[in-house]
Length: 370
View 1 (cartoon, rainbow, N blue to C red):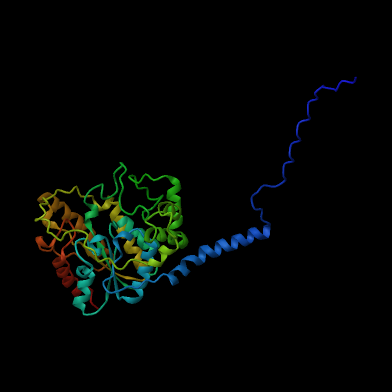
View 2 (view 1 turned 90 degrees about the vertical axis):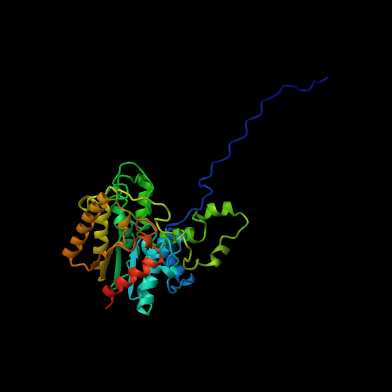
């Protein structure tokens, strides 16, 4: 009898699969890479101009930038160009020009138009636009303003302390960091890392990047589109674009109550010497930028609430104002440094109420009318 062979043999190990000589990624030829490059350049150069054609934007009487879009500099650039094409005189400045305590029909530009009996003055005020930011705004986003009459507001509140003048070492969050110089001159209280600074500097010079930021600011809750889709998983991101731009801002940001009724006490501001002031140097730069573009610049110094200052602070303020007006005089820049408005016409240290704007417009119109 033959017994079956029960000897077990070790099976040979399975052969390793041959490694592919390529990955699952798409491989492009040289010509295809050139095509991608051409498409990318066309997108960067063409998307922003095309968006302007598709996105409806009209400058109506008494228009002012929506407060919620204060950081939408791409839209501000469009507005400044449109305003320059429609108005005789453009008014640049901070929230005093914009109108923190009034509606858009109570602003300085409104009363100037009302008293001139024609639509001559446009409100290009930007909330929180201290001179360092204002110079950046004019440099990078108001290049279309050339050969115009310009009223440039000089708010000396920005020289009222080393902190307002951005001179302190300690970090603090000031308005419009994306408009200030990212590398030089060095702003000691601005502690942003190198990479974001570089990104901001590039965005200031490439309209496509400004346009993508505009989409975030105006349509996607100030976030990038991927983040927005996570927060709105059932919404069509393209459908949001159909809602269009918000209208001119007609909101009243604060109750129109005078500073005395609000119980604000007199203050002793630690004024900064204009000779060492970063804000003042930036204001000088703003004047130079506008003049180099052929604009006829008129500077409004104020309207500061001198009633709110202690005797010592008022004396220091007068020295600051004298240094500012002396520079304007020496440079041959027309200016007005009107006396303070009535005390009850101020809401705080620098913002007038409606009757204050009306009075200031009457004083200005005599000086800026042709």
